[in-house]
Length: 330
Ligand code: SAM
Ligand code: DTB
Ligand code: SF4
Image 1 (cartoon, rainbow, N blue to C red):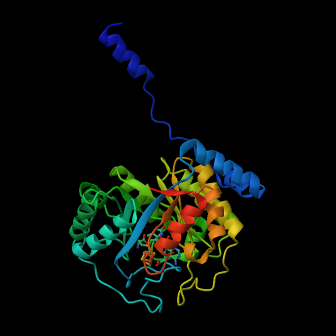
Image 2: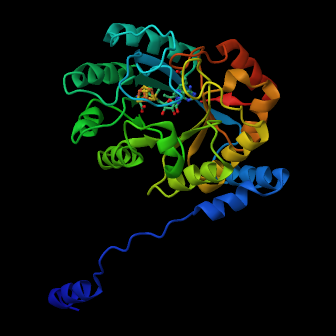
Image 3: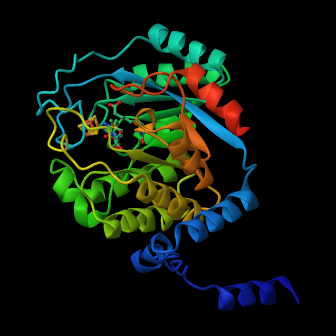
């Protein structure tokens, strides 16, 4: 066949891109949630073992680089200026302060360093300082992650340029429940930022919070939304609400540990190649409860004695737990 014939064949066969069908819907995720517990955990372990070393756990250390005084009204958050939570607000840290914390995290064995800012989104004037932090942390040989809120066009590209690996932006819950938790921005704002992040070539870290008074259907809705992102997030933090006195969600009923483990298992099965992180709320869990979450397919944690404004298990405690369970950190 000559070139013209080849070209005309290519043109004839060219088809408009077909949007890929959603892989999961709320009903199919609910079917997972309703499995007998042992069947669900068995499926989660099968999935984990197909794609990962089942005893390797990714470790990320968090640092709050700008604390409190946030304009948004997220009902779970200690950092919203709308609630009296007794938090001491703090301006943006210097690169030197961030670097010292990152060095310490690296010495403890963390593989990734995540920097969080209590912003609706970064202002243009803030971005150069954050970019300097990212470049400095990256130069230590750590993976870098930031969570800065809603990004405007072009900001994700600037962060990528500075050496950023991951952007964390949680969907937090199902679209139907989001308005009960936050009113100052929308679910669509979150999805738009995730699209910007992806288009800039960054890896995506996105998950949610359970224990906010949502239903099982909402939990399944969150998992279906995350799993249908194309591609799904590389990293999926599942946070157990840390109740903060003074916030609207301070008195939420704690979630049953089996339901929490089911949420982790559903994330594992629907996002087989993603790291699923057992995130906030670990300090309130016993060692056996945490072990259950690893059995349910979690293979990542926040490592280090603080999260953003609340505490996390002390490093030696985590190291002992890993030893007891035969886990190794990466
Ligand atoms: N301001 C940015 C934003 O909202 O995306 C970044 C920081 S914000 C604190 C990051 C995430 O922390 C939230 O999306 C939520 O999932 C989690 N988070 C905040 N407070 C929490 C709490 N009390 N318990 C559990 N997770 C929480
Ligand atoms: C995520 O999913 N959880 C982290 C991180 N991403 C930024 C934050 C947890 C915050 C817990 C409450 C606090 O310490 O303020
Ligand atoms: Fe602000 Fe983020 Fe807290 Fe919402 S979750 S109040 S955007 S810091």
